[in-house]
Length: 137
Image (cartoon, rainbow, N blue to C red; front, side, top):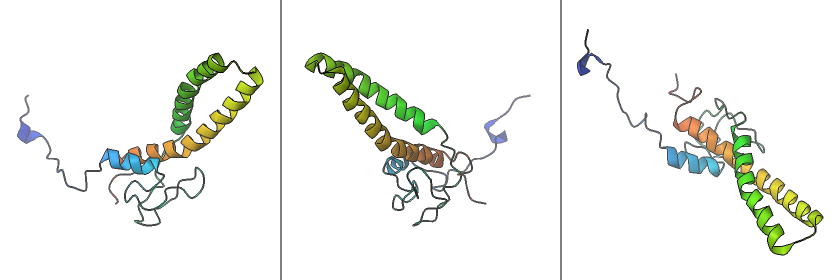
């Protein structure tokens, strides 16, 4: 049995089907709604709002889970490890000074990146229509 292109179901490509990935990711990095880019995505430090306060887009479907934490660790580790080696070899400070400076730096960078990366992951899920972000019923 063989199939022809006429046997396959037609898929319409409406403008509603298209959700551009890059603008959504940039909006998520700014912690804004991936749909309109105006409303705040979070109602706390990491708590995603159920709906965008501006466009009323449903954001409750997200499943970011541990992804933002893993990405944060990956980025901070790759930035700080070579920096520690360079700093220690270039300036030869007391180890306690190195420990203190880089502990504060790691914590500050992690706290800065975590909500932005979570926003980006939620925006990717929205753009790809994952986890219930598809068409509304």
